[in-house]
Length: 97
Length: 97
DNA sequence: AAACTATTTGGTAAATTCGCCAAATAGAAA
DNA sequence: TTTCTATTTGGCGAATTTACCAAATAGTTT
View 1 (cartoon, rainbow over the protein chains, first blue to last red):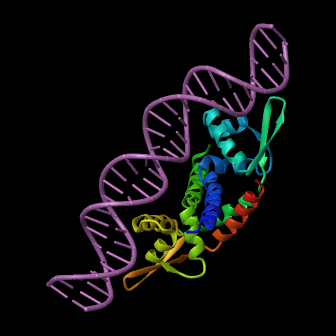
View 2 (view 1 turned 120 degrees about the vertical axis):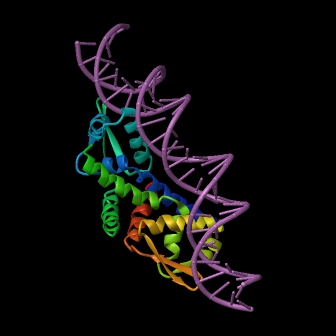
View 3 (view 1 turned 90 degrees about the vertical axis):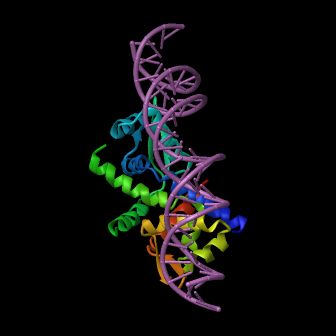
């Protein structure tokens, strides 16, 4: 496989990897309409806050969500609406099983 | 997080996980228009044939590709065209970086 | 300044993923 | 039947991921 092509698929795989954890999919669902703080998301999911912070970091580094600082809080929201279309396709696949 | 909701996101994450490897994305690209055998794909990618067989198994178990047996060969092809739309969104994300 | 709150970072153990090799299967061809 | 070819399976070590805890940061409030 060509080096150029290989890099292209490597980059795309990074995006899918960022989306391949249930907590991160839940985050996307939660912040698609309204932005939420790390603490709010932490309480919704029921996980350690450091764990949540790391999940958010993965989504942020991949430009899937973006955060806005207000006082002590950082409010995250979905940055790439098209990831929601991914979900519809995923549902189609799941329903075939 | 509700048990029902949790299961839903767990299932969706499985799909993304199946797509989160460069070789598996390459496979999808290769078999979107024409079906190919395990051996052909192996030679294109340059990996051990047992490794390729396992990648194909992951995609097959998730109903993303499907195989048809002809003589000794198994020809795989894309089963869910909507995954290609995923890619377009991924490219948008990559181009933002 | 001191106390408090939200978030991030570093570290560690457990679980998962990945690639290769060797061996097993399945079926075709000789 | 024996030999070949294509594919799958099992196993192992290396690398990656994940969750929690503890500690560090950053910025507010008192």
